[in-house]
Image (tube, rainbow, N blue to C red; front, side):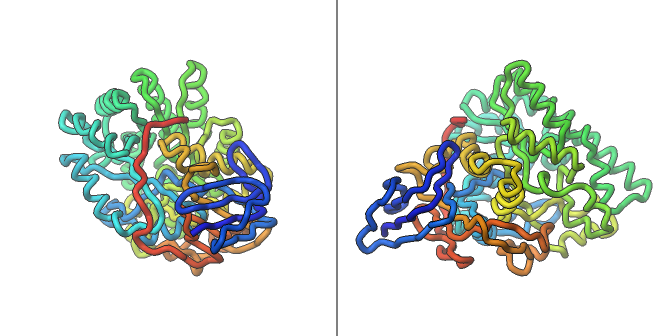
Length: 458
């Protein structure tokens, strides 16, 4: 069926104009003024509203095994919630089990996702055991359309790889044109501080924050950049939180190196004062932790300076009963925070609405840059003829309140409970189908497809 979106303010990373968009099948067929209404087609009046490309969140964890439990959003609930927030594509992290192959991890994640996703999805491959057997699997994983590989520089004994493994991973991924991403924090120092705080009986959520000071992220970010520079590989730092880490990216530019960086919506809007609220602080126990106001200012500046290219979420929700596993010991609180549903509305209201970023920067950091960096452009991340008809209609003046009582994520609290926002997602199209309209889901479980990705074009 044809769909005509009429009279919207259509904003991409490089254009801004009032026009119509004609959708035929799964793709955008025409863009222009006064397009003819298709016979028997649907018309969506976008007068006074903003139309942007479907959001891409390149950092989510759905049904992720972690700290003896699983993150609470499934592929069905997580991608449905993402659609309600204007995010039409997510990229999840496959976690290799140490001692097992990359292929077995891929098959495990495919089993969770295939036939269950409501929105589109892709995968990164987190390599937790780089060895001669793993090395020879890299080429086949790239051929599957998984062109980005993650290294954890923390979580020793489960996810962390050492520098010898990291440089080996970088060298092999470079051969196949892939991208290496990193959770860049110094795991050894963090583990030492955790042990010191526990031994001293300092067990509240505040000590999760104090066990991961800024230096642990800044040092690891610089080390990752140095190794990537030596290896000559494309490098991307996930969930950057602080000024010190951002300065390592800035320093890399002085030697003509490009290090790509992602921050997350929580690091722009929330701060470490939330850890002072007794065990309620467990709701925002995540790694890296929330930082200080000065770090928020640095990250907003980094977005506008082009040093931070992407705003994701690190969406990794746990129910309150799961958070209670760490009631007497902060080190046992499952690390994670729900945000995939609210990323775009929060950034629109608090970023665009308050003059911190432009509308075009909003499109860049929520969609276009991720599409380019992770090999999905121009199929996704833009509004152009032939692209997937992933479109988000925003009512820029509509006010609403965030609440766990009304969100679609499978989690029973929100760090943004009671926040009043201006700008509401009105209608979402995914591959030419109305996926969400006026708060109702219009597509079913299984509609979401795996997105096979190519090499970065950023």
